[in-house]
Image 1 (cartoon, rainbow, N blue to C red):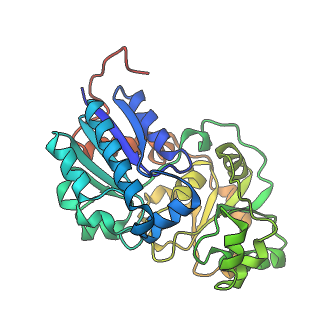
Image 2 (cartoon, helix red, strand yellow):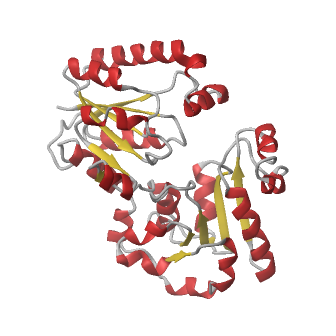
Image 3 (cartoon, rainbow, N blue to C red):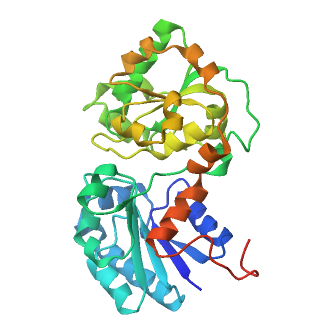
Length: 340
C-alpha cells in the first residue's frame, strides 16, 4: 500500500488538509515542513535565496527530512510549492527507491528553483496554465476546503457588497485603496481583511508604494481564521481577488469565494479557464475603478451551486487529480482499518 510524505511550506493549514484528504482515502500520509524555521528572517532568507544566512541550517534540515522519509517507509514523496529542496535531495530520495512528485501553486517566475530538478521527478502538476505548457506539467486547478462550501454550511444574510481578505504583498495596497474610493463613491459596503506579518516592514514598504500607508492602522499581523474568512464570504455578494503580479494561476481565494456562493471580481485573465457553468459568477476587470460599472443586483440571479459545481471546487477533486499524476486512484481498494 502506498505511503505518501507531503513536503512543503507551512501556510494556512493547506498542507495538513491535503494530508488529511489522503488519509480519508485510505493512504497513509504525513506532512513535513520543508523549512527549518518559519520565523520571519528565515522566510525572507529562503525567498531571497540568501544562502549564507541559512546554508548550514538548511542542509541539516534536509538531512533530517531525508532520514525521516526513508526510515518512515514512505513509498512516495509529494513536493508542494517548494523553494527549499534541491536536486541533490531529490536524487538521494530516488536512490532509496522513493518516487518523487511535484505540484506547484506558484509560478516559475516567482519560484524558479524547481525547474532545476524537474526532470528528476515522476508526477508533475501545476496551478499555472503557462507553466503547464512550458514545462509539460499537468494543469490542476486549486481547491477550497469544505468549510467554504455553501452547500455544506448555512448561508448567512448577504449584507456585504464586496469583501477582500489577503496579504498586502506586491502592489495590492494600491488597488485596494482605489477599490475603497470607488466603493465609497458608489455607497457600497466594503469589508477589507488585510494581513501583513509586521507593521514595521509594512511601514518600510510605504517608501516604495505609499498606498500601504492607508492600511497601517487597520492591517492585522495575526491573520484571520478560516472560520472568519468563510463567514465573511458567506455574507458577501462579491469577493475581490488579486493574484501576485505576473502570475497567471487561479488563486485558492478564487475557489474559496466561488464555493461559498459569491460572485468573483478578479484581474486574472485566465479566470475563464474555469468551466462555463461558473462564468455568470465571474467579473473580469482591468482596474479597481471598474467596479463602478458592475450591477450588484445581478448577484440575486446566480442561484445556488449544483453538486457538480461544488465538487469541482473541492479538495476532493484536487486530491483525485494529484493521485492520478502520481499513478494512483482514489477509487483503489484500501485497508478498512486505515480508512477514515
